[in-house]
Image (cartoon, rainbow, N blue to C red; front, side, top):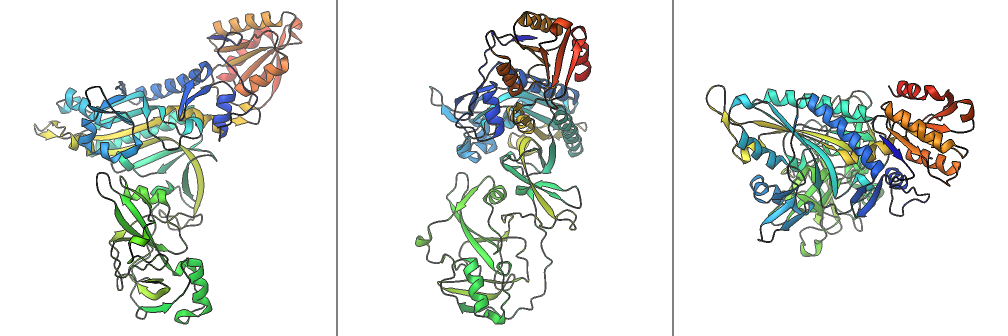
Length: 577
């Protein structure tokens, strides 16, 4: 491959795009890899398409090596399969829907579990057809409320999704492990520093679920790691170690006048000033905060729900929504219509709505909390004696220093990352929904179990750019750079012609070459563009050309060395492996 910058559709920018919020967005636009077409939608320009294609090729190689077979579904799908699975309603506003000219409902595919299940139902009938792994590389659509970060959060994006079908749970685990290992190889080849974390399944359903997160300060996912073991989890999936149930030793519940204390801070100050219950050491952790939210279940009327948690914690809406999925929750603001819910003074005793508590609110624990009357709180409100939650829920925010739920010895540290892959053990959710049965080895019907494995390919390009750049521009890993070598003619006096000749030689040697043969462009501009574009090796045809030498620059390390012209192809090929 030989690309000439004099004819390439490329426009580099010196100024940062006004809507760019993260480094990958700024640099991919400035270096001429992508161009905004619409909110959440980007055109891949020639250099960007080359990078994306190399990412796709790596993913295809590893999927084939793991036993996958490639297919391709349409992106425009009928409503009926998603009605059968329940996800037409569950997805809510997150999907693009439309009607055709006959009035039939369709959606732009966010994912294809329903369609692949129907395909397998149609084309298999016996245990001899299994195990089976199918994958596709397809454009997907999500109606993001706030597209941001360029390729990191778009409305249209390229994904690889794979689906495994097995007849036993053991087979599913084996397929899941193969895909997990394939993902590790893929992200290593892409040059992505990543962490595998426990995750929640959300609208996908199923049991076991893990995310692959690329380390990045701009990542929207927060995850934790343990200081003493290898535990790692998305904060949405972190579980809270509950204290053991304890014998009730607290005195009977007592109600106190606590005027003008609608906040935890004001309550703690007053409780200590007045030595309520004979104590002057009250802290926020001794109080029970009760937060009311409105829960919207798909296809149902909204429900009010109260969440009880220690007063030194805040409700994390992402964790709450993950726990309630496919329902969603927002903070309740209609207290005027519910006089029984006294804002700032709500207690769990005799509450008239469903009440779920943080695991720390364990049987036998005693709390300072609202008395359900204006300006009044109660002490010694004991869980299991004075109130009984309807269940527990993981909704409290996770903090650095929290105890590790896996080993119980270490503490949690907080990190940020970009989700680049997600794998699920779906089980039989979809084969049950569509009643998929095949003839088993014993002659009886057998229902396949499924796994699902996704990689955001366009997002992976952005994640690589986040991890591989400096203050001058991009620094692509050689495996996915748009070219193997960037040849720059530094001046005049036949150097452009020599650069083109060298570029042709390198191309015939099997290297992918970008050559800057632009006339009337200064050497300074060419070098600036070369660093912005970020190809790992740059060959400068310059002042020592007459002596038979050129300079090779390493984009990442900035190392330079002069090499005989005749040796350039061999040196670069050796360095690139």
